[in-house]
Length: 279
Length: 262
Ligand SMILES: Nc1ncnc2c1ncn2[C@@H]1O[C@H](COP(=O)(O)OP(=O)(O)OP(=O)(O)O)[C@@H](O)[C@H]1O
Ligand SMILES: [Mg+2]
Image 1 (cartoon, rainbow over the protein chains, first blue to last red):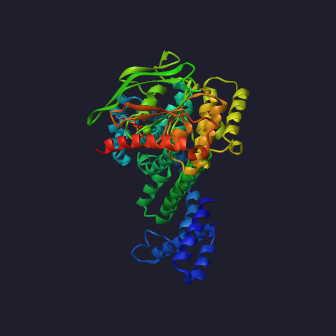
Image 2 (cartoon, each protein chain N blue to C red):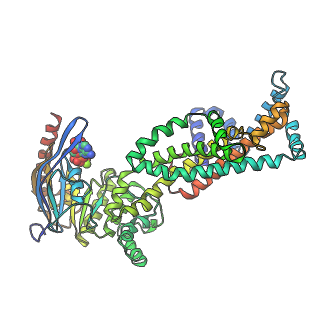
Image 3 (cartoon, rainbow over the protein chains, first blue to last red):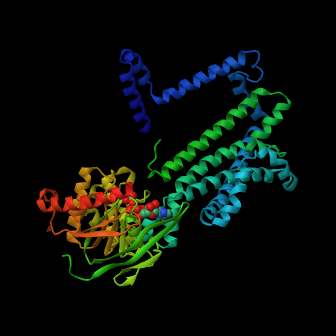
């Protein structure tokens, strides 16, 4: 519904600005949004094809068909599903742990000044360090395998989500809390019936950012001597200069990211549809 | 109605000093007055003279630096459900529907579900929002939101209603309409009302008394009795009685306004 409104606004604007080219405009305006997605995809594939032909880039960008074919190659080698599953397990457990930890810590930070003053600077500090930098340290203590992967993703998602939720909870409209108190709400009611629902939008944002961070830290996490995984495989393939499956895996990571974002948005709309959001 | 009955709110030498970065700010400098049961008191005064501070102290949301407020003879030490508040920014819970908002106070007070529903619907009808029972605040206009806020305050059944410029953000027409609705409600279900406004017309049309506060540090400059009989409506604003008292209050408020400018 929102996009339709936007389209109408654009139309009105165009009509006022350039009445002469109206018929032309109407043709473009009549293309439905879904079709634009297809057009955008076509343009991207065209661009990709150009890259696959140019001598200077062709070795990094095998053409569409070669990349599509490489799915078969990877399945034949018996690694495709393993890589996919392994990465998904690491991402989901790391993200899940990060979320479960960030929620109480963020709330404690928002409510207790000492907790806030002691923890916040360090969270901000570590948050800015790329996970790849501390991976070796994690490996020294946690060894190789699944554990260090999950730890790295947990750290990265925890930091991002904690800051996001904490800032949200701190910015809750104080008049809402006052309004609840004058209506007879006790501390427990304030927490459950005001703070919790008022924080929900920020928690949803944190989830969205958290999944994105989980994905970006995946490559770092899988450099811990993983035996399978999308990120691990890309590194392994680089040793043999197999650019087709590499590109395939990169695109798959992108698609996973897209799906996570869509899922998070659906959840957000479901749970916080009451929000007065300007989109 | 005025001048009889018993004292509902006793404001006794209330002083309030805020510590700010620029030093101390004296917001209230010895405010005393009695408000009778079921009396409607309007408060006007220049911006920053401490009106909101006084309301917050009566509501128990702010502590006075010295002095005290007594409600039914008992010292106010915190919020209490017998003192309802309507905020200027509506302060509706955006995640609750109109009904959820109006029922909130009843739920807090442990009223049974069916009873709460019944009471909530009564007040939703009173503010003429029965078609919006299940709407969320984001789907309502400013005037409708403020109606919900009033219904919510009423549903919790306070005996004192504290209102801080509740119509300040509304257009003139909606404002007039809500003034009449508020008056009708008050005449039906009497409560002690403490109503802050910037609008002298609004103060007079609603109040039995208009309290004029002086520029900072806030003090009560004068309390003007409005002896215009109820029911009052828009036509009341054309009467000479109204215009005379309006002229008088205006000139007093204007003096205070000039004092602020200096
Ligand atoms: N929490 C606070 N900390 C410091 N100073 C404050 C605080 N609250 C109010 N003040 C100061 O106290 C004075 C009175 O404020 P108050 O909000 O009561 O004024 P008001 O009469 O309601 O003004 P307005 O009509 O603009 O709403 C102002 O000078 C304000 O700066
Ligand atoms: Mg104020």
